[in-house]
Length: 160
Image (cartoon, rainbow, N blue to C red; front, side, top):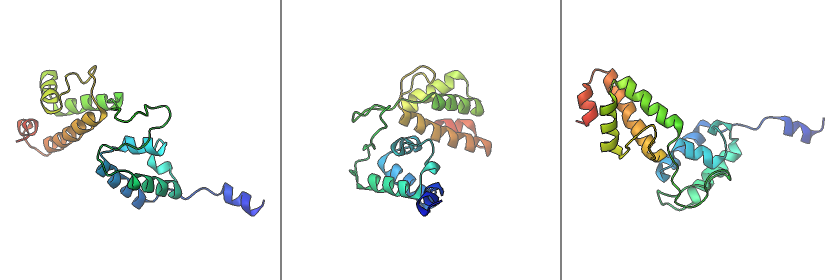
C-alpha cells in the first residue's frame, strides 16, 4: 500500500466541539436554526463534517452579509430563490402536538395560544413557517419545564 492510499483510507478528523459551538453561534446571529445549518452544510448531522469542511462552512457563514435574514445557499433539491420561507415540518408539527399533550392543554386552549402568540391557526393542517414552529417549540418546552417544576399552568400559558 502506498502512502497516498494509506492517507485516503484514514478517516478524516471529525468536526470539533468548538466548531459545532461556533456554527451554532453564527447561525443564531444569522437567524438560522439547526436544520438550516445542516442544509447549508449539505449533511444530515453537523457531526458528519470533517474539520476542514466545518472550517469552510464557518468561513462562508462569517463572510456573508450581516443581515439577520441572510440564508446560506440551499441544496439543489430545495427552493433556491432568495426570500423563500421554509414551511414547518411534519416533525415540528408532531412535536408541538406532543408538547401540548405534556402540558395537559385541551385543543381549544392550544389553538388559542398558537393563534395569539404565533398567528398559527391550525397546527395540523395550517401553513406556517419553520421559524414560527421553532419559536413555538422553544416556548412550549420552557412552559413544560416550568410545569414540571411546580409552576401553575395558568402562569405559564399567559406568560405572567
